[in-house]
Image (cartoon, rainbow, N blue to C red; front, side):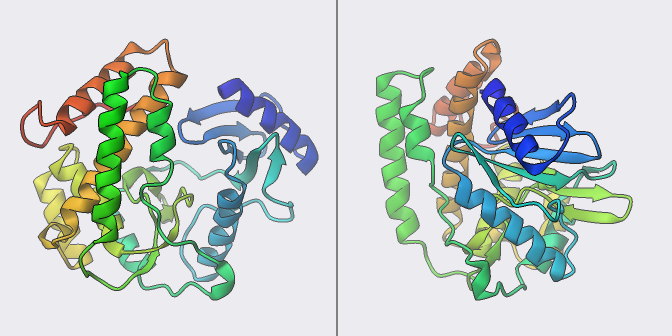
Length: 295
């Protein structure tokens, strides 16, 4: 998978007139990121994500125009570049930075959730269950019985999400709001990873931090309290919270199944799949479960 992404990068860089040089792998996950000469980062999407990649470039330009500090797409290039079904985009690399705290995330979400996206931005509706059926079908490190159980859980979550109780007014949402996607540079916070940007319930963004606290224990109680005070509400008091929590937990599990296939030489990822599956089945006691990160 990484070599396929690298091949796509080399072709796209030639099309864009950029020097791929000795492209350095930064990270391989849902997307594959490479560092190029000239402080440029290439983002190679999985097949079939051309529309999403184009949206990311539009969102970056819109947020910048609104005065929101955001990762900047390289200008004066026709982007994304399509190579064998993969979309490749080119971005300016950030200066040294650290992940944002829960407080940093709260401040940025308050700002993002007040923005009114123009019609020409053509933001999609949030689809929090997207790609999960395909991930479950491809989950080679679990049994057929496990896959059937996961599909049943997915079907139940579709029904619950369709009946989501009334909450805050829908707005522009980041879609994957956690500390690593709000980078803190010397100049302040910068929004990263615009792949899931959409119009949807703002509670979806707030649930990301709530799950990090209540499900995974990676956000402390003090930091969670700071987050709630800074944003202005506690999403866990909303009746729809358990639905969004359960969706996020299933997304985390199916991401692990995807990574277990792509990193067969890392048995701890396959172990994480089994741990996460057992937790969702109620076999590992109450939250927090403190899942280890993958890959």
